[in-house]
Length: 166
Image 1 (cartoon, rainbow, N blue to C red):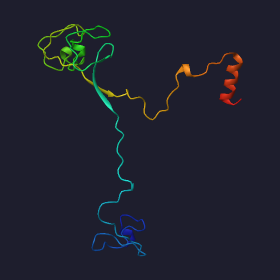
Image 2: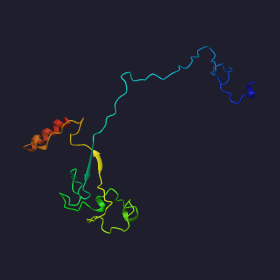
Image 3: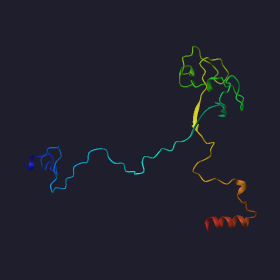
Image 4: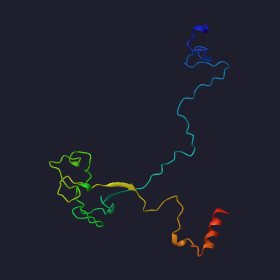
């Protein structure tokens, strides 16, 4: 009878399945699977994700200066003085598409960085990580003026020796 079995490993098909579909193990060490949801491993509950604060802002395409909300895009950038109502500042600008615009424009705008009167213009807005509140979790770095500067070569050698414990 062993020669007609497909798999010859010990334990495979040693006993017929019982009424609930499980195969009984020889030796009586079979434990039925518990039904219901599995208890969570962490007893303190789910952890909240660390969300990075983000800021939504419009930036100049040329110098990346953050433009204030409500900026008049008919003017120029306050820092580099380039035109803001141009194709490169538009959210629909895409260099790999026809006429370099995602919207159906009737005629191509030749100069993408010169001011134009396109009616489909929509200012490009970016979402970036907020770094205005400082680096969280990092120790503060002392400014270079707060670090004592060596006055002579001997002081520098002593500082080096203390640093590397020579």
